[in-house]
Amino acid sequence: MLAIPEEIRSALFLGAEPHPLLGKWPGIVGWQPLKPLATAWEKAGFTRVDEVAAAKWPLVLVLPGKSRDEALAWFAMARDRLEPGGKLLVAMPNTAGAGRFEKELTKATDTINSLQKHKCRAFHATDDGTWNEEIFAEWRALGKLREISGFTVQAGIFSSDHIDPGSQLLADHLPAHLRGHVADLGAGWGFLSDAVLHRCPNIERLDIYEADSRALACARANLSVHQREITYHWHDVVTGLSETYDAIIMNPPFHTGQATDVDLGRAFLKVATAALKRGGKLLLVANRQLPYEAALEASGLAWRKIAEDRTYKILSADKRA
Image 1 (cartoon, rainbow, N blue to C red):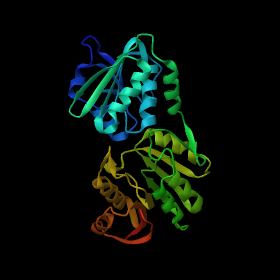
Image 2: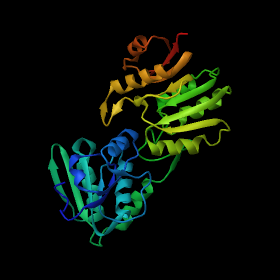
Image 3: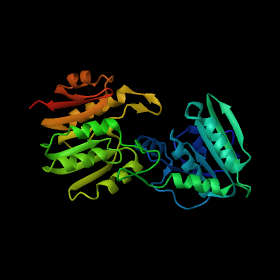
Image 4: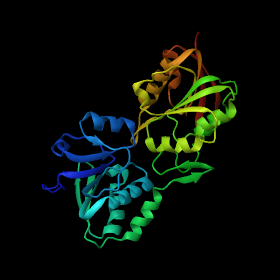
């Protein structure tokens, strides 16, 4: 906020997160692809958009994620929404490479101002008509849809440059007998969903739950080849599910930002247990060191380890009838 001129009261916020000081800005509009943060933004009373319109703003705020390509693509997105003479302002923690990204933006804008406080950095530049548009064009390309192994992905979403080896291990050990109503929790861009639809002909309906709207859009594209009933939910799984399932598959997240958060995975297990029908089956992959077996025991599920390698383990659990 220290970098923002008093006279500016209208802004676009990419990666929007609420803050009390923003309450003085009735003209601020936020874009946030992550469902928990999007919900927090709306609950704080701010305006949110699903898609960033082509309108121009005197100020564009950017709070990017930890992916290099995502951050640079967001810089380009911000540049495209900036009025002539407008200000582009980025804030990042030092642990996310704030210094490195400040140098990157300096290459494109030449002149940049920087503030450092609380192990974070806010750096900003004003469009004076001399910015290097070739660099912004390179960054803009980083945000476009790309392909890996025949699947559509995008920078910033989980496993956007390779097939996650844990998900691959689970895909290799999916039983063919899963049937009925099935859910994929934290489905990402749809790799596991694609695998289970190929492996299990008796699935009648598949529900996709994903907190990142960009990943969910990729999943729609990747699963469009299947002539099956698929429902897509932009949803924060830890808030619970409204339906019950014959089977649930998942590669649960265990990071909040850059920090390991085992409780996040445990929350996924708790929600999955509640959403399973009696006699239903849960299949999940996790890093070997994560203590999910105790969580399965506490939930009353009968579980067994069906596969593992040097890094991952596959757990199969049944909800007792």
